Length: 294
Image (cartoon, rainbow, N blue to C red):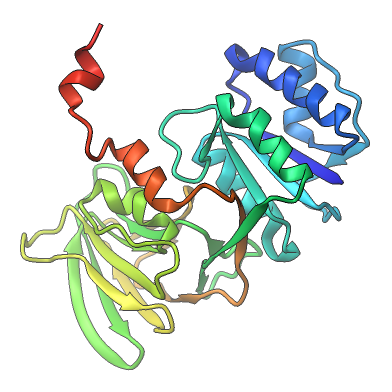
């Protein structure tokens, strides 16, 4: 089995787990490929040079069976950007904090590897958003969200919004988030947007600090085409795709719609989204006992 590994460069305290993971993969006879930045981190920061087959470049394709993402959700999003249309399943291993995408804890890794090499897992397909503008980019898709945002301490922006050929509204706000079901637990959740199950055929629009408090989130079908035109008193604004941000001039127009490919997430057979919600959101837990029990 050919396995690729992506990782973050701020997890020196997890070096024992990382080394053990490479050793375990070698024992299973895996052919290991490592993303270049993570490979450099291993060599320079923890003086570890694993026995690997080759290096993964962010600009090149590589035929792999599975990709492991070691870190938090940010690392998973970077991994997903590299995978793109290659249809390679991604397993998120959480060595960071909350992690709705990196769902496997370090303590579950032995059982997870056993499941993988015995082919006891399932694949979930996750929808992406795609944006088009007068300023094209090769990286125009987002797994979590596309956000239109004001710059720094600038005044709020005006976001003129249409769904298909129908006028929706003008958002007067610090920004507008267009989130996938996967991204509904990310930036969208922080502005009090709704949580969508990953299998929902929907996207959600959520304003960031709207001028009017009755500007609520709106769930839309994922086959809709969103058209926006943004005005800014400071003559520019920001567009963020999963945290990758670029400035655009005022009055730029964009189309946002569902991408024509999906990202494959590898899940253990006994794992589901509701388990993740309960664990990450502490649903059904007495938080006093969780935080204050010695």
